[in-house]
Image (cartoon, helix red, strand yellow):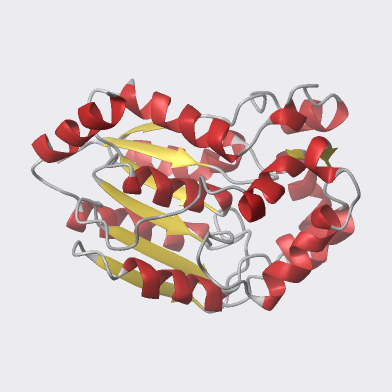
Length: 273
């Protein structure tokens, strides 16, 4: 059984957002890696004040290829746990034959799945901004409070925004619409087991969309499961009660991960060729 976990963050957050999960999993004896997206590897306050000039060029292919390269450095196929866009990257990486098992938390819009109404509304500040495909975008505190972390008490909004929120590349949003890189082979016979987790109060990635992704993914012969936490928002990995989500994700992953890693390793070699 693998003892390595890779945590994959989404847009507007960097690897610091996993600090709770990382510490909790390490306390259980796991080796946990949480790579940043390219040009995201600084403190969030520094990134907001001085985003890397190359951040605006980052797209889906570059991010997913970056995580694949990081996986290949590991001594064993890891448990992959991704949030939001990172949950989409997790599905793509599993489709490439990587990972012993995957957990996709609040997955962002995924190619081939109908968008939820909240996802459309929440994407508008980026997609409705002219030139956003070539710019670094910033999240407003109002958007964070009302849509991204809408379950937070109002007196906690500034603290969490200051601690975790980073700028992101508008190109990532446009790639999600225009690029085929996110296309997934839903009935892939070699995909590792996958758990999808959604939030009933999520205004970024509707729970209905998570269910729709599940309906697609369950076409694969490997185990596929769905869990909806009805009272949780998109900020589920950080807001109060995140421990329940973290434990559910890991317990399911440990119970369903592939025990025979030889097939995973073989697939990784084939994909690298």
